[in-house]
Amino acid sequence: MKKIGLDITVLNDAEKTGIGVYTQELLTSLIRQNDYDEFTLFGFTTMSSYKSVKKSKIAQFPNVRLKLIKLPAKLFRASFLLWQFLNWPSINNVIRDLDIFHSFNYYLPPQTRGKNIATVFDTTPISHPEWHQDRTVQLDNIRLKRIKENADLVIAISENTKRDFLEYSPNSRVEVIYPATKAYKQVVTKNELMRKFHIKDEYLLSVSTLEPRKNLLRLVKAFLQISTDKTLVLVGASGWNNNELMKLVRQNSKKITLLGYVTDGDLAGLYKYALCLVYPSLYEGFGIPVLEAMSFGTPVITSKTSSLPEVGGNAVLYIDPLDIKDLQNKIYSVLLQKQLRKDLSARGLVQARKFSWDKSAKKLNSIYQSF
Image (tube, rainbow, N blue to C red; front, top):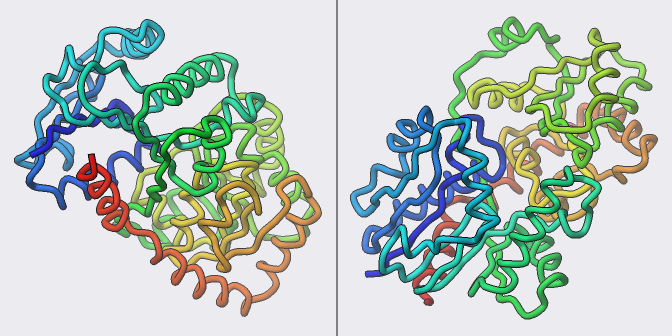
């Protein structure tokens, strides 16, 4: 029996996005498959989120125990960041006798015993610091340097991320474990969705945090130059450096609907009933919305950059994310060609089935057993 520590600090966020979804779904599948090792779930939580983390599916397996550090919300971020900057104490002061400790939050704490594994979602703080706030660049450079120096194994979420990390750290051992989609439960009808969000029957959808890397400003500019009665629906939490985008959205509120973060049930409906998902990101470690849209049979337009061709295969329309005219032409193609939408839908369903949490969890478990 191995004793495996898992950092689940990212599960503290009630509104989970890519990293939180990846961690929760992968580890739930992993522990469901592995009933012979002992797992300790370690993490920082706020007082308000402690109960929800404790009651989550991942915490209910008989071979799981919890080591959660509860903090007032106003101290949560500062305390977690301070631990990372000080790089002390070691994880072994909190969890004794670990064979493996696996971090899912970029941060790899010091360890005096056992093997270190770190999951890396992308290396853009190093390769493209202009896409991040200065404080994020500073912290993630420290985190990635420690991973480079101390990890016995790095797990990347795509082949593209693996290549990027090996450019940064050529001597590291890196394995790829892909994300998959959530087990969404359809809870709203189309009419309910239209009434709730006051959107028209036919719409284009984009799902991402509102920040420069997601390239939404070019998407909005391209869409506004198209002659169509369709609307563009933007879903996602507000990020940073998006003032120009928000101003343009507000000025064109009859053509563009901004919904912010939505529940899983509503997001499932938005995917299912959209004419198309448009995902023009400049760079992705993976690009889960592309996979999620395909799993609902929704046509996808996305960038031919970074990991996105790994996700979309031959089932999506690709664009140059810097070329507004190319984006316009692809949107026109989807709007005007019903047969193209049918073909993309069929191919997307096939492509989406290539990714599975059970398959990814099986690979992760085999890695643990190899140590």
